[in-house]
Length: 125
Image 1 (cartoon, rainbow, N blue to C red):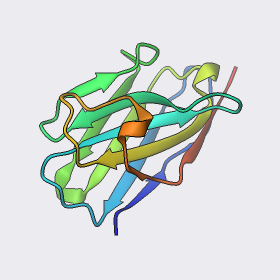
Image 2: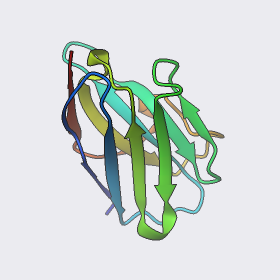
Image 3: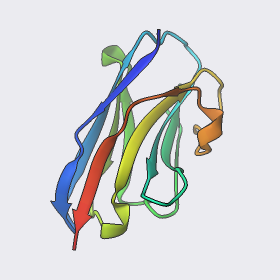
Image 4: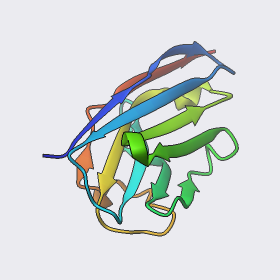
């Protein structure tokens, strides 16, 4: 049973930083992609950052240079370091995983089969 559990969300002021974590349980694929997605009220879920099992990454244009995705395979953890946060970054953030391999990961939500429950990020101006 694959389980993803996010943590690290919270409320910060514009310009602040947060680090999201995703603990992965029961996932033993050697080839995979993982990603961070977000969904604001009334908006569709969108890809933020992704990483593949070789460590190659992809980012949405809106977060390039501000967010960094990383993984610790020994600890089965996925991270998202978010710097220079803006009010438009406010959303529920989800981590996702899939055994399909896409170089750099995929930023397309429907390509992922496994999802966490989400963690809220709120950025005030």
